[in-house]
Image (cartoon, rainbow, N blue to C red):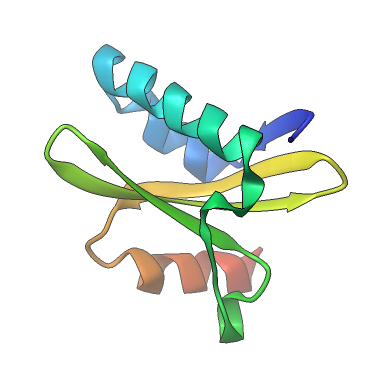
Length: 95
């Protein structure tokens, strides 16, 4: 179980744009990740070391990318599936 949760600026900006109901649902999904960090799919290749957790907010499929180490959950990116992996690769390489 994760002890501390950190959000990247990119993640926080996406959360800010969500409505109140979606933010509440997202909190539940984050709690699930905290409880069981291995719940997401670990990526390979360029994205090795990050996990992707897929869920729905309303009728839209969202993906949340995170890393977990030393009892710290770092929420990296959040967004709908469209162009997600392309954007994630560019973010990971730049940061």
